[in-house]
Image 1 (cartoon, rainbow, N blue to C red):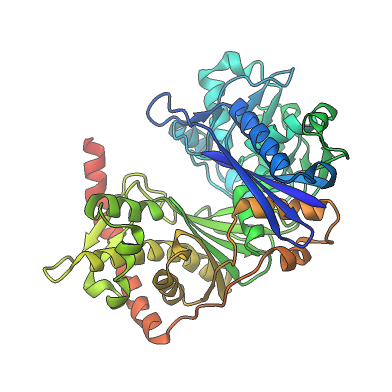
Image 2 (cartoon, rainbow, N blue to C red):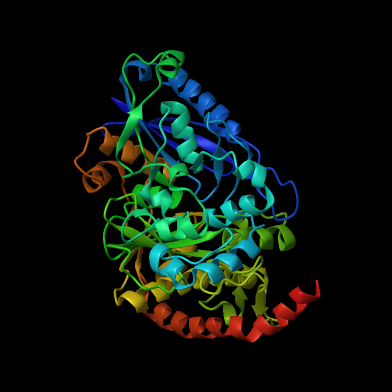
Length: 497
């Protein structure tokens, strides 16, 4: 028997086929565009997600012939926060406003003033442009004709699941990112809905991520030649599914994910933590638990920028080849990765990056190592906040993404985070987590912990070096001073533009 995990991302959709032993059989992908109608706007056509899913399912059936007889379930991971609006017939009313759309600064300010402490107390998060509620407020203000026709609000993967089943649902992990969920009561927040003039009737029923919410529509079952009913399992938000797919299912374990942006994520037993809005706090796809998360806006993007500007003829392998010959601290060179502002812990769109301490001895290899150290220091700020507020050390960190591809960078992570670092034998990201949710939903395993023992495997751990840990602790203290020292001048330049 098989399950399929579908990951609906920002640039494309991936489908992964797994068997009952947790072995990946095949994968297929399909891309789609992101539309930028004007500066700060970011939208997609939900119909493009449907077309991509259709292409992926067709390809998987072609590549795995016995999938027709043996596919038992499908589940999902999806980009968070992006707003999908449907009318009474279930048709899309306007392009989806994506998570990385920043048109809603004014709406965020209004929500903060209007809802006060209620927003943070109930939802555990502050109003930021990425979240769903500010996007709803923007539509209410600037597209009242569209708003008057709205009969259903969904997130991207929920719309895809609606296409497959005809049923409306939203899981708790994705609902937590809307700013409409009371995360302690696990119910849509009636007070926020009332103040924002959002009818409860246009929000879908809430479900656990492993819940079976329907079966594949008869016409789609026939289209793909499936011979048995295919269970459709709710699925989860991409970060929650990423945590599932890397085994972040218990206290003391964290996740460091370095892509274009960087995420530092920690498993939480509940949402009853007071991070004061400085970290995101969301429901986990593992029922009854949560995760906290800090974000570095330009993590891998900082290294990409550096390579393109200063070493365009180098491959990444060549660029990183000599960083092991540079001592910890890059001979006094510090880099802050604030190329597009910063999210955690500053939420500052005006701050910009810096190289501090340049002198005549520094070569390309020093600058390269300082960029990598700066990215890692930025993520450590999230780790430090988590450990200080919870009084719990993160003993082990799973590293994924670009930061997991270089052995020296992994050692730098171990030394800066002062924790053991492990990597996955096979890295498939949120799509693996989605497949695991399908496997549990279909009854293959009693819970995600048991499933993880089959589906998730790690390479040997990398341990911190005590001497370099001590060196980095001193350098990190200096790194923490750079933001305060450069904030005023960066804000002056930003205000002059």
